[in-house]
Length: 291
Image (cartoon, rainbow, N blue to C red; front, top):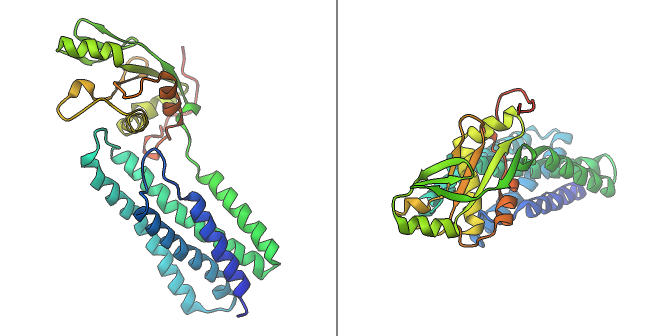
């Protein structure tokens, strides 16, 4: 087989790239083993498409190239598949992800398959015009560059997170000086005062101010926090529902929840690592917020 080395190396590196990107985290998605199985299978197909595309172009097999382009376009359906899967889980979540977070996750999954195709094609190209080592090196460089470009921005780069006390002024619940909601039952107020956690998010730039104003971004923060710390909430218990409330005058956001694990340090770490959603990126020019 004249192109066996290029196709073989491209396939191997492409599959390894997909395996390295396939991990289940605090969002508990993809699931194991069914989610892993489907994504690994699709990863093999994506790697094969990328590996075969270069030899097909070199030998001027235009029919094969057309077929491969059609197959590659089918990976656009990955986003729809992930979106539908996550939306189907929303009804069973005590703290939902929200449509913006779901769309962001779906885009990430789609992008990963394009990375696999690109890595496999780069490795095959390197073998065709060099050696197996050249192909391996080019595939690794392509993978590293793709991850660098496609990485998500964590929230701590643009937002300062500080732990704040949960307190009451009469029936009004506050996190620091930010009003959250009214709690009518004395028993609930007493429990929240003892077991509630709060944090205040302060934007570092005008762009970050717009990001925190986005409801989808705030819901993503609440989902991540509740997913790791847990939440003492059930149906029809609105006073225990995690809330992210914005202070209109300053653009700061107060986060409130009653977690299963009372760990304020972990709370700040979770918020800091929450990804900035593409849909929540502000359009304002980046400049420091005036004090």
